[in-house]
Image 1: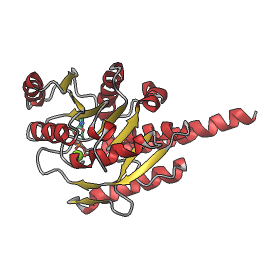
Image 2 (image 1 turned 120 degrees about the vertical axis):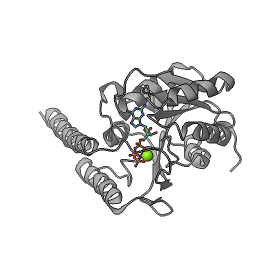
Image 3 (image 1 turned 45 degrees about the vertical axis):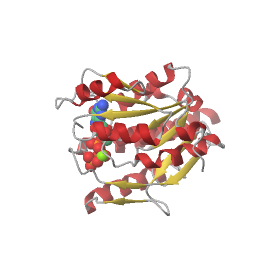
Image 4 (image 1 turned 30 degrees about the vertical axis):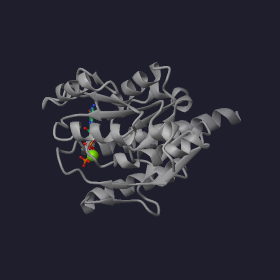
Length: 252
Ligand SMILES: Nc1nc2c(ncn2[C@@H]2O[C@H](COP(=O)(O)OP(=O)(O)OP(=O)(O)O)[C@@H](O)[C@H]2O)c(=O)[nH]1
Ligand SMILES: [Mg+2]
């Protein structure tokens, strides 16, 4: 596919949350900016003690397509994304927003492919591990189990027809991101990914899944925790209860 318009990054802001990603941040920023020669990158750093934010600032000083949003404290991925999305939407030239991890688990070379459906009919594109052509490489069995169980649980409980609900490699059309209930999203981990796809689905957005290979990080350390899994579980139950309550209210 020729790289034109959105697929070359025109009007695209990639939002990249970082916490202690010193070993990754420069390489990933370079890879993203070269995968999208017309794209813009926003690093959202939560005051990383390892100096990730300062490194990103140094790059931003010589790269006009890179900005850094410094948040005061580590408040979780969901909160960082909300602030990053707000920044991206404040730019009138933004047509699409991408979210991805800074640890190379999401391949910057996939960016044009992730953006392509937005140029046809889609409002949201989900990078999907659990479909033909997708997969995870280098994850120990327990991480695979947690991820698959989480996605399956959410899919069944929320009756969502998507195969990867906990993934974080997604592309949004501006209008959808503006319309969903971001203000109410306050989950920090995988829960944020589930929740945003849920609100998009409830708005009857056109959602397309594309296969991606997710690679375990080779540098830096994981921020994954038991609390994040518990939070996602609680979120799914809460969303289901809310939906039942809304349905009952409508039948009254
Ligand atoms: N700004 C910000 N970024 C965060 C926070 N927590 C995680 N991140 C970033 O979010 C992305 C995903 O976090 P990871 O630690 O890679 O989580 P994961 O992919 O579930 O776990 P591993 O890949 O196994 O390490 C990475 O770019 C992190 O640096 C946070 O509280 N604030
Ligand atoms: Mg990761």
